[in-house]
Image (cartoon, rainbow, N blue to C red; front, side):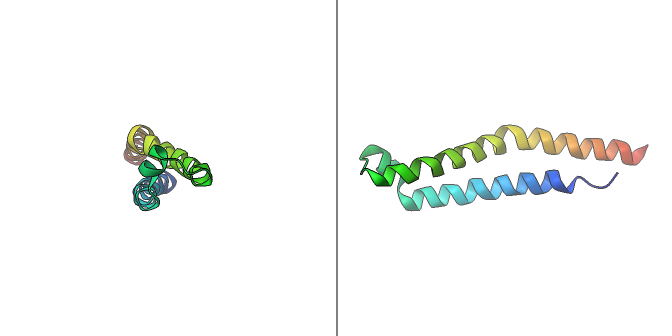
Length: 80
């Protein structure tokens, strides 16, 4: 069984989305846009925030278990 590259690539992609999304939303002023909405600005900030927070949830709760399980399964299959 080959090393679980897709799982590691998925975890790395979610990490990059989380880090990049945090910087992007900070640069675009998400908090300021939510506190004083200016009409059209909020319409494109909210979908970006949803993607960012979805990636954050995946990074914090799904990716660690998925990666650990894939690497453990790979190690068990390799020893057998």
